[in-house]
Length: 108
Image (cartoon, rainbow, N blue to C red; front, side, top):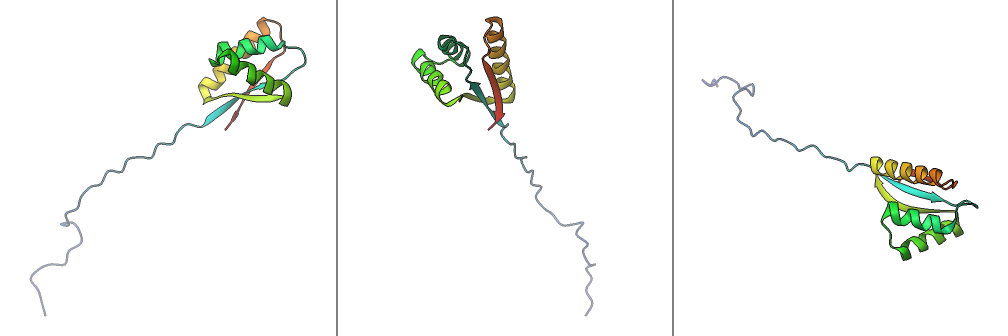
């Protein structure tokens, strides 16, 4: 049995073009950590937390006690650039006031 229609190779097929939206991942977040030392006054730590992390006096006092008792506390979670800036600000501020306060960041 012969037909008059040539075999199709897919060129004449009509389809719908589907544009897929690329999945965007959220940027990784970083924890900013404040480390305890035996020399930085507690009042200075409270001031740093209020000034650079926008904490109320009561919040800053609680976090300062956590740093004092446990040796370290997370003081905020930010994008890489913001975390890096906060760490730099705290370290510079502590150095200018001649305190050995240490602030660091790590990936969450």
